[in-house]
Length: 387
Image (tube, rainbow, N blue to C red; front, side, top):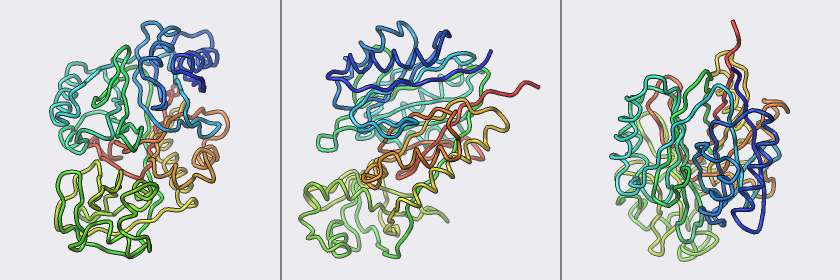
């Protein structure tokens, strides 16, 4: 049996109609085969329950998981305030799970995923979405160290002012949750990840942090350090647009011999940076800056990694999750990362995805997941060649 995949994308006045239209389009593209699994990438402006009602009206009991994103991505480019439905058919099956306790404990959620994975030897990959504003995804990754299969995850994004996002799993919707799909069947996954941000030489010491907040850099409020660099008064960093545009200027934090990128979600009224990954006191951090050219090169690198990891399998579909900072950076050139990917993939491999507040993927040489900021992760689904 072969692997089939297709997507649909729609805008509408309400979530039910957008979900219905996107699903109808995906089913038409899929053809006469019956879908076994679905993925929804939907704007947070729609009500999650309405989207599920529209999608389920056509899919029935087909399992699916979903994530909120300010803008979806397809082969045609970026689609703000839309609903994207991806459908898989053929030799792929999915077992989906709804875990509402992620915001309370990333460790307990990770332990539950390990328990489920151990129950079925035929699991081939894990795809999951988790809340990007609440919950400790770094703790989740540490719990999943040594996970014995390819793993791909994204942290949902939504309203930056209120910190609202949602997750979906079949009829269940909500915030603060993790939704997961264990995938089985005769298919292959290839994963690639890259980013387009580089150090510009400015260095800081994280002198005080607490949980997800960096309070001070070099002994002064974090916003004052940025004010000196960029010329805007420190108080202006606590208000739009600078309080969210700070994500364009993340910190590269030393972790061993590598720099881990850690990006602010916003700047707080007291000048501290709110992240979704803890950073410990005393580490050195370097200011990073991105560019369109370096992001396009990163998108192509991630695709090339994913295709190489397919190990000869024919690529059928590509799923991509891109950090929200890319949407900000590429505002004047929306969908530039998709155009760069298509230069590698060609016109015949469909692409779908969205923007997220964090990306999670297995290391190329193992299955210990990494929590990433500012990256693009690309997952190529491939059909093994007949011997």
